[in-house]
Length: 110
Length: 112
Image (tube, rainbow over all chains, first blue to last red; front, side):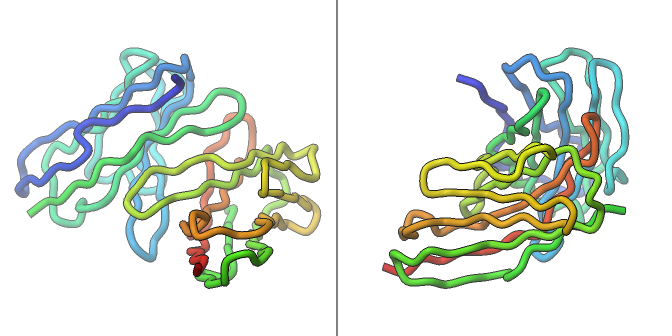
């Protein structure tokens, strides 16, 4: 089954404690992306990757890092999380057409 | 810069009604347009993808149209059901390598 998976699905952490949210896709897609979704602000892109070792900033990249060492994986790294990074995070991938989304990671930073 | 607007922000209808959700975008030079459904706290499910050369796409009770020149798309839902209750998001892609730009969605509630 074609899918995008994210882990963990829920995470509560404290300010400053480094964390990584993993994302994996099984569709051999070159393009992958991370979004955050906040009430009233909609979906905003954090980072995207056109292919292995190629990443670029989206609209809200501050406080986040990404890496793309393999085609299937695109982890999101928060080196020093802060409460304003409390949000619902989505990973996505696409080939030439439809963009597919993961189930989301709900992150709370205390 | 591309901007995507969805009107209305929320809509409540009785079961069985046909309804139309609207999406407008400011730059008509799009590669494709995609409609998604999102249930509360869940991920996005792709409903329909319309390429820039197409005028409409259909899937079951859903029909999406695209008018690039006027910067508009509509999602038509026939014979609405309570299970259709969700937020519907419209997104446009500016080029083959472009990123998706999302509207803020229309929250649909279908009452039994």
